[in-house]
Length: 210
Image (cartoon, rainbow, N blue to C red; front, side, top):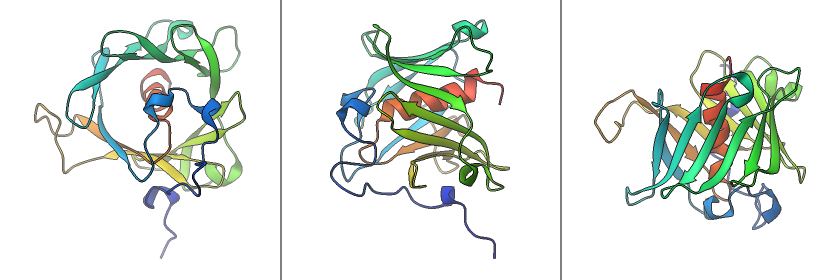
């Protein structure tokens, strides 16, 4: 029997009250960190028409995600509140020779938080995975976004290989308009910043050449 991929395993709980993502400086949006002993699940549209809404547990739209797809330097994903205030952005970098490199920025001020680029350590890019991306924050925290070979599954791991978020097909559910198959399920584990996972996954799926 072939060994199971790490992405087939459940989301890993944090090892301590400090969480695996570090101190408060590592939060892109502190108000969007998933509480301890809970998981956040949300269906992400496969082909959003420029934007989509993020509901809370009561089903009310509290966040808005906007896609700006133009020239390479102008590509970005913007996370906003329901009233239009910018919480965070994932923006294509300017003046770089690399293809598909992005910056994660805080709020409308554009304060630098982290860099997103393709690549990762050998143990995460061997045969069980493809299309590995790495996020490294200004404070030094690192997360790996890995797509499984021959699968729509994409997982988020820390440096120890713990799975802290997963994006996968959810054949048992339908979106709010009963359009089955038009969305995928995003599951984010406790004490992880939901905004980081959402922005990066949307950028990888819609703003890159993969």
